[in-house]
Image (cartoon, rainbow over all chains, first blue to last red; front, side, top):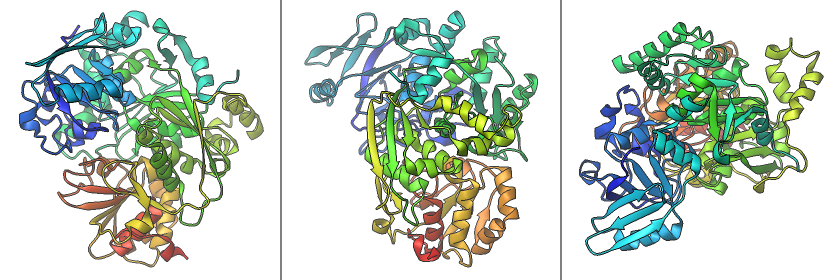
Length: 174
Length: 428
């Protein structure tokens, strides 16, 4: 199982698409590590600078419909090679969400209210998150406060996370 | 309780329901292209599992960057080519025979009603036009599909869209799907199958249905399905004529994949197209939609007609009708990419290629290239494109470029005017 702990990058926008996460011109790479410097390079978000803002961040917290658009698994791979194994959002596009779990990574959907609460309490502070997959708990902490939020993923998703991904699971069962 | 088309297909292909959470389906087709497949192939090789579940059910094409533009894209083609050869995948379409995947695979008769299909490409939903369940997936799903012939999906909640009325002149399938995306928004159908129904869909050609189904994913949908009917039979007839005594028998067989009268939909909506105007997009989301009349006068640098949305013969015919006898504006460059070699040949035989060339268009070989800014018409920073493609995302056709999505008719009119324009002024 991958590790699901780290510092948070807040992306305050809905509908961030996979072209923004990794532009199509890098889809000619057959080596995932080549994607590393280009993560979120075309993100349209005022004030965001992918060269600086990704530094030492392992968890993304964002709004609705994250990962919409192209099916490219290069999007989760670009996150993975940057050490980001978790995205927490109000909702995800189907293919992106499936790609995350297929790679043994976590895409956690929380209610609008939970995301707004996290946003107001933590967004402008340096925040650390650790995730207890087994018990479904997100632990958030900043210098001033700590908070636990419950989440749920399906048993099938949990099985993918534990075994390392869909190739491993399918190999065992089909 | 009756079943929807998607539920019937799921029922026929179900092999497992792990934890009761998801459905593992047996696949009838795994489609592959050179952008998302090579990494799956390399990973299978790494794992010592370089096998395919059934070479006859796997179809492959080099379409995104062709001819190769550099060493990296040449290598992607090489990996796919050698893999197809190694595994006896007979339906592999290389340069000279290749075309945009979602145009060439249906054209070859590979998509039948009731099929389950995956591809490492989000616009795989296009094939739902034939009454199939077809979904875009990532490389890992593709890899397992290639190796095992299975894929997992959540149960297919269906959103029924009844499209009624009469299309006004100048309004095409593209305008209708843009209106649908505007109303549903970019995640209005996430994790759902859209079923397109109603008199407007019934009257549509397979090409028009493919345009509708193609952009279902822009509303978040897993697949966009149309019920199979005589139009589906006619389109497929040359490929299925040995399997059925006649077209009537084929229709009867296909009718199995119509939704039952008492099927349960999670959502239903009726859209009347009678008062519609031609539409286009603004901004960087496909649900940012406005009437062409409100966007008229917006200057463009490049016009692109092609892609899996609107690169088929009917699209070229409509554009050529607008262009005939006209020249494109001197401040515009225009590109047309017929989506397959067959479409290219038809367009040549029907004199359409001449019309495009006389108007000042550059005619390219079949490829996806420009639509996603990979080759064949990338925009410069600050440039504006009018395109018959499917995504206006930031940077989509080139970093810092703006894309306005529209029908082939509107795109042709826009090429002539040099600014977004209604096609009616050229066809009345």
